[in-house]
Length: 183
Image (cartoon, rainbow, N blue to C red; front, side):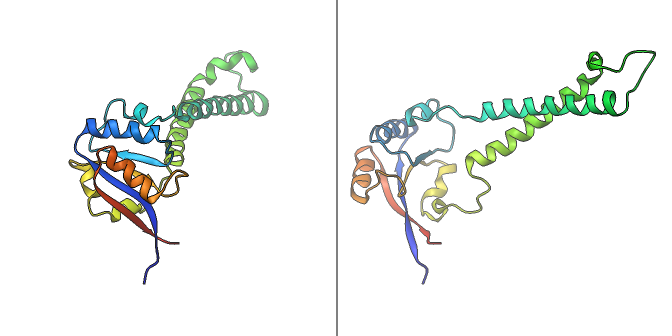
């Protein structure tokens, strides 16, 4: 016998506009651990959900800054300090940085790209091989024609009765209590 625990409630909505309005109601109810699922992007849904702006641009900026600092340090150390390269009687000092620009550009782009990839994966909690919503009878329609809201049980405001009532009042149909295997 497999022991299961409650993951949360999943409610279906008839259209994108109904999902949008329901998201505003769930946000206004004070829930924090919940998400909307739709087969296509819905303009303004993140605002209706009360989502904050992502910190990813700041991470990418610092990744790019680290890349340019790494490139300058590498080029300066190898070309000026360790093994000065004198070409046509030009000095090998800090003023020869024009020769460093290609590697500085490349490492800035490289570090920014890696920061974007790994930062995005970390912020999204990936890789995750399985999700409790995949066990739902109806969630497979989220990529075809279904509009869903899932409120997680780990939300501080989650209550089996109150959350169900909230989703029903918001226009949710086919409410399902989703369970996940206990670890």
